[in-house]
Image (cartoon, rainbow, N blue to C red; front, side):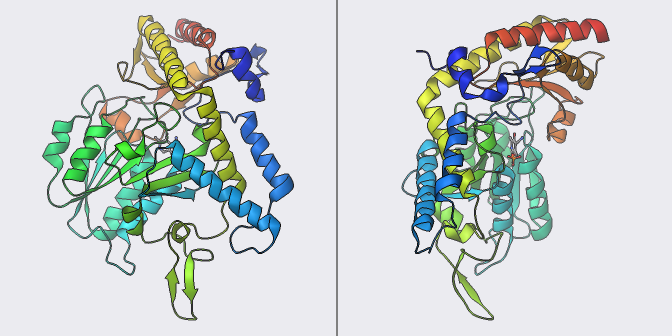
Length: 412
Ligand code: PMP
C-alpha cells in the first residue's frame, strides 16, 4: 500500500473529510498549521486517560509513567531532528517561545555576563518571521547591541557573499530561517550558518517551516540553537522545542524562574538545575510533548523522503500552473524544497482571492504572514499563500489553479 495514497493517508486526518460551502475541503493552509494525525490524538488521549500526573520526583506510579513518557518523547524528538550526543532538547510552547528564550537568554545578565554586550552585532536575515526578528530587536535595545540585516536580493534570495561582508569580530549572533514562511524561499542556510560560526557567532536556526519537510539534520549543521513547533508537523498546537548544543544552551539565562528548574533554594538565593530542566520551569505540556513525539514517529512511518518528494511535486505543479495565469507572479518560484507557494495578483487584493477560494472549499492564507519587512523589501504588499502537507493531492492543486483563474476573471 502506498502510505501517501489519498485513501490511506487522509483517513488519518478525519478533519479533512468535510464540506465547506458545499464543496470538499481542500486544506492548503499548512504553513500556518497542519492538521493533527489520528495516531497523535490517540497518543495524547492515552496519556490523559491512563497516565496523567505531574512529572519528576513523584514517588507514585502515575508520576513515574508520566516522567518516562515525557523523557521518551524528548529522546524521540532529538533523534527526529538529528541531534547528537552533545545536543539537548528543551520543550517550549512553540517556535516563538523557543526563539524568545534564546534572545532573552543571550541578552540578560545572570551568574555570567550576558553573551551580548553594548556595541556587539546581531545579524538577522531579511527573510525572518517576526518571531525571529522582534526578540532580537528587543535584545539589541536591552543590551545596546546593533542589529544588522542580511538583506535578500530582488528575488528574495540570500547570498553568502553578502553575509561575509557583514561579519566582523563583533558579530555575536546570526538568526536565520531554514525556510521563509511568507515566500517559501529556502536560503543556503547550511553555508550561512557555517560562515557565521566560523566568525565566532552563535547561530540560531528557525526550523518551523523545515522540520516536516526537508528537515535539517542538526548534527550536520554549524547550528547552536534550532527552534520548531509541533503544530506544523501534524502535532498539537502550543507545543515546540528548542534544541541545541549543550554548551550554547548553558549560556542562556533562563526566561522562566520557578519550580522544577532549581537545584536548591534559600529565602534569598537559588541555584539552577542542570539542562534541560534549567530551561523548563513550571509544569510542562506533557500530553503535548507526547503528541509531538507521536507526530515525529508518524512522519518517519510514512517516510520523510517520500513526503519531501510529494511536497516538492505539489509545489512544482502549483508554481507551473500559477505562472501560466495572466497577472499572477509567484514569489521565490525557483526555491528548492519548499511546500509554500506565495503569489501576488495584478490589481487584485489577496483577501478577495482568499474569500472566493473559500467559497469553493479551498483554505489558503492571505496577508503579510508575519513577515512585513520582507514583503516591503521586495516592494510587495500582502500575498496569497497556499501551502501543502502530506495529505494534499494533485487534484487539490488543480482546484486551486481553477479557483485562482476564476477569481482573477471575476475580480480583475
Ligand atoms: N517562524 C516561522 C518561519 C513560522 O512560519 C512560524 C509560524 N507561522 C513561526 C516562526 C512561529 O511559530 P509559532 O507560532 O508556532 O510559535
